[in-house]
Length: 264
Image (spheres, rainbow, N blue to C red):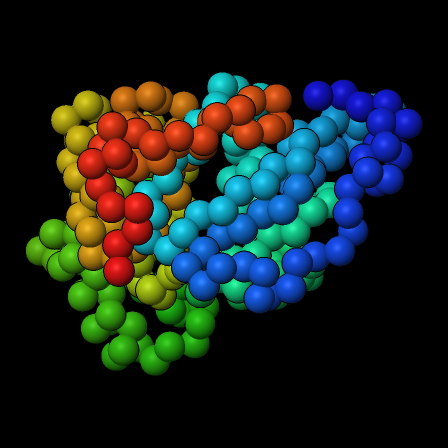
């Protein structure tokens, strides 16, 4: 949404500058944002993609973020995933104030705290499933034998151990997404951030992938699902609706109403 220069000044004047102390974030909250703004400069125009988003996600919640194109949900995903920094406001991830970190520190947070699952899988075409899953451990300097052991363990977890030596072009779309999910799990991240994980899959395969995410939630993982599809969002237990860069609604789904608020 375009803003005038005076509008930007009003934001700066009206938004508290102080960040909450670590003690202000409840122990069971893994994601907390306070008054997040993201403003892009496009020539002479300034566009506010996010306009004061405040939310909290508890450990082992299963949350979907929904919104139409241009709503700001992708910008919010980038901030939650530490792929970008807010213009203003604070973001705590697992009790770390990440909204003020530099690029190197954000890269470390991404590698150890967040497991990414993308619509396009983002797999290395010439590498086996095993090696694709190992990649975050390569960047972390983990020895080869330990990398292989850990990668095989998570491939078993997603029922793909028997395909570990196959390359992506030898796998179905659903199998490739399982490899991507295994890679997301390899560092035992604080959250799994899934961006349109079924966007390139047929309905039957989509249901299989969502059933796998369900199982991972049951095993204690915190899942944040970004989608524009209402039927996919219904797999989550809570849906945060984003519109015009703001939280329009935050509600429990039917599945969430029947599930505990948080699993220990």
